[in-house]
Amino acid sequence: MTEQPIAAAASRWVPGEAALADEEVARGLVAGDEACLAEAYRRWSGLVHMLARRSLGDAEEAADVTQQVFLGVWRGRRGFRPDRGTIGGWIVGITRRRIADALAARTRRTDLVAAVGSASGLAPAAGHADAVLDRVVVQRGLAGLPAAQQRVLRLAFYVDLTQTQIADRTGWPLGTVKSHARRGLRQLRGFLEQDPHPEP
View 1 (cartoon, rainbow, N blue to C red):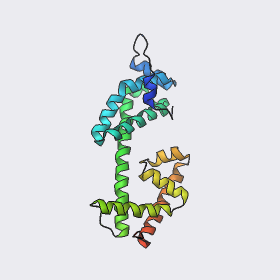
View 2 (view 1 turned 135 degrees about the vertical axis):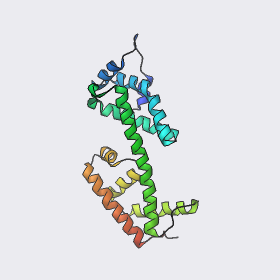
View 3 (view 1 turned 120 degrees about the horizontal axis):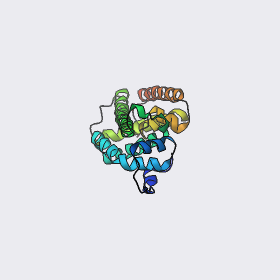
View 4 (view 1 turned 45 degrees about the vertical axis):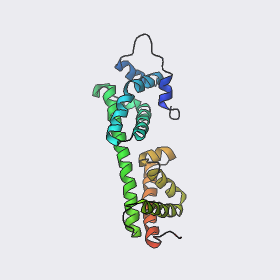
């Protein structure tokens, strides 16, 4: 279920004669029943998407968050505790965390551009030309990093993954990811301070 889209699973869901109660959906989900995951998606994906779009202001980004939420529901299904609340409330909690991740990713991108501007002596990008120059400078800096550091920073800044998600994607321990990110940023700043302007 980590590879196939949740929406595709939902499209194959054929409800029984009587709709399942939320509690039954939750029990089946915890037990690993993909049909119950698809039913959970059918019931709550609209709410998840609405919350994400309201917070992020972007339909495409909201769709990405919705996908991430239901992947998180599937992967974390054994962590659901009915004595602590309903399955719907649990899904909304995951949604809020994924929205926070998406907003944090935006902040990381902004911070990187600010760091580039500060280290290179460039003013903050206020127009197209400055934005293009910033991208060229960052690309040159990244290209000079060791492969592991370059991979971590590209996943963080261009794929918008958190460090935990990078650890999941790469299979590396979280501490290793954090170390690569810290060293990569230090080397990137050093590169920018030594050679702030791209060659013509």
